Amino acid sequence: MNRLFLLLGLAGLLLAAGCRKDDLVECAPTPTSNLSLSEFTQRNGAPVQSFNITLSPGGAPQVITTTGRATLTFPADGFLLPTGAAATGSAQVRVREIYSVPDMILSNMPTQTTGDRRVLISGGEFSIQVWQNGTRLRLASGFRVVVASPLPAGASAGQQLLWQQLATPVPDSAGWALPAQAGNDSIRLGGIQPTFYTPIPLDSVSWWNIDRLWSLYQSAPIRTIAVQVPAIPAASTGSTQVFIRVTSLNGLARLYPSRTVKTNWIAQLPTGANMVAAVLQSVNGQLYFGSQPLTTQNGLVVTPTLTAVSEADAVRLIRQL
Image 1 (cartoon, rainbow, N blue to C red):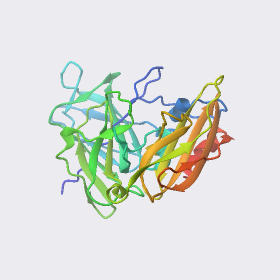
Image 2 (cartoon, helix red, strand yellow):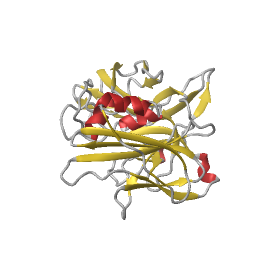
Image 3 (cartoon, one colour):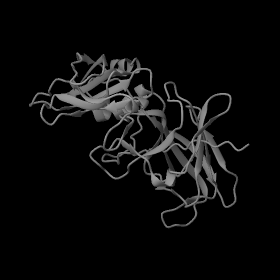
Image 4 (spheres, one colour):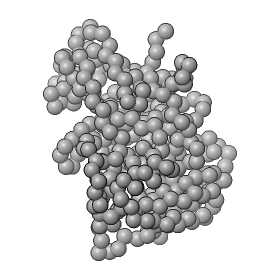
């Protein structure tokens, strides 16, 4: 029986400043007391994993297994150079995979739809790129990378869909959309150990996500909640990230500042849900973190207490959410 494997989209490694959003500076974190949030994400987000595969006309499919126990199968004769010529010889696969809410926060990769920002319950976020001699390869039309990925804790039961992070910059650039080319793909569970199976078209430019829309949207009223955070002093440099997770489910929303009260970060969410808000802030390089459990209701405003933390403590507290 052919086993379909869930394709992981991959983010590339760039060691220069000004890299694209789906690229990642790969570095070994060392303790520091002065970090911007972008530096914090680069240092503590899901790491890039590198693998070598061999491309050849009529060659056998190339199979790799990630540290997260996902299996990716690549066609040996399906990759093209920018000129359109077939790529042959050794190539490097670069993979990132995210299976948990803490890793979503550390990687700044929430699971929300583009536009209305509804929360998705994730079966895994994946990014994949294929490189050869410093050149990024493309997958030829009609070819697929096929991946089998493990079922994460807190994933939603039932039919899953394959979502893509839009490559074109939009105001909600972390949002996920349903790509037309994946509309007929089926994602199924199989095997003794629950595993998602699906083929994914590899465009080498964006992330992919196995998700199901949070079921509470179908049964609960949608209302506004707010998380109040301290303003960054005018004479200081810094930034803020505000997230809210669904308790016991593998879904994460990122909040955005209100247009009227800039210290209130808001979201439209189903009411009656148990969730946890988490705030990460950097002021002049000093990290601050706070979290607060809540039950969503209309007009709710919560104010987590922020405490100055080291980089290591911020990571530890996020992993406890």
